[in-house]
Image 1 (cartoon, rainbow, N blue to C red):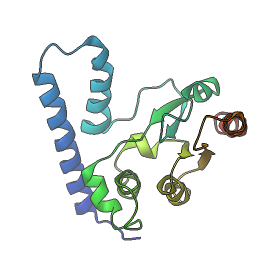
Image 2: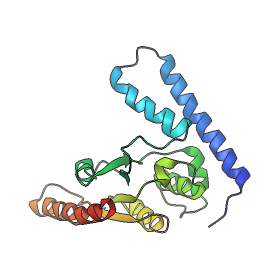
Image 3: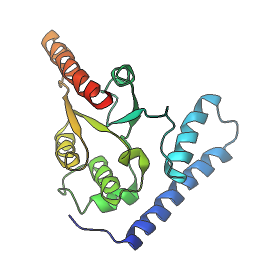
Length: 185
């Protein structure tokens, strides 16, 4: 894995925060923003412009998830806060492009870029990463993230038509529960 200098990290922070601030500014210039959008804009400002961690109760752990297929209710019930990390950054993508196989999807490259440069508390402060294996790239992502953070895969069946497929998914959720309990105490 290549090592990134302090200057490269600084350039990454400048560019990524500038891009996020630009999106935020353009959205706010639209005016008449629905009240329901304000929490999302707050997360964009705090997490990607100001590079702050997410707000949570004192001592509460965060669990990063990479898809809506991870039920946030299980994470809340275990006493942790779910943080959806399934998003991309072109700046992080360019760093991740050097780290992962060329056929990996942009999401995987972006996630690995964020992990390598270690600038976002949203990523670095997670106590656990939960990755539903919905494609080969997410399977590769789980293998790579295991080197950086405690990571668990959640196998998701390709179909929900058969009862056996849904039973398999429910078994996976039951397998996740003790892992969450161990992380949260």
